[in-house]
Length: 388
Figure 1: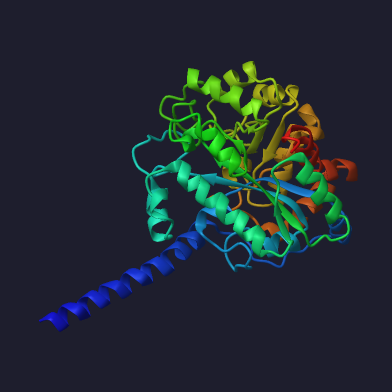
Figure 2: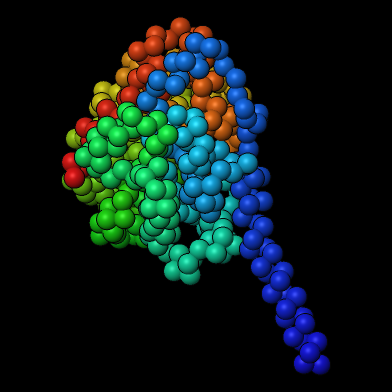
């Protein structure tokens, strides 16, 4: 009997190990699809121009899925080798720390947490299972560890001095790439504003007030009540600005956006979004919001997925960019892919040349293309990150 019990226990252990090894990849592949696999084609003019661009993307969720980003993957959207191949200078790596089941853009309650399950099957440290702050700290540690293991090929940017130094080195080596840490939703503070310092020390430099549900900082565009900033939220904005951390209004409710804009003394970003003028839904920005964000000196990152642009190719992405840039100027437009954000995109990060091509076809000047593809982000970060 005891031998049989041992055999059953070993069988169960093998099944558990198999689940832990296979489920994260299967979920990742299912959630982060591309409509067309690489390699990607573009006009000769676009290819030539693209090689000479400074490219920066304001939003990717690639850390969430547990991939070793130092290794090229045949699935998902982003890893460090593919960033280098796509000539990406800087990728903002954002982390959602909690995600309700049955996610949608209309109304979500804060009652369950799919990332809890992902943390278990992904073998995250036990401390991350019930602490959103610890989840953020763990993923920051992972990105820094990958930078250390890259032999200088990948760096994490924490201040404007880092950025200036890195850009100088990249001028002579376009195989270098860099990342900056961001968080989707200030519920990652675990209800404690003092955890802002903890996250700052870990390297986080951009945080949004909310993600897919209302929290104790402010309302979400996809929350139940879609409230504005709370009193704690107002203090959060003040403390973010005091640290030169960037407030990201992606996913925020209309009331929260209004409240932040009314009190902000520093420029803001909307890291990944679309425009209601080209794709009318609850997730995207109205004309008034676009104008108000630009008036604050802010940046609007245009997303690649269908909810952001109501399309399935680079032309749809550029149509949204064109709408915003004609309204407030190309200097306020940026890339905001939402790569690896449980979305389907037309291409992975090696296919960004298709955006360059579509922008040329849409009549953008080379100067405007340079701005939107990355120079706007570099300028913004240089001016708004901490100096050291």
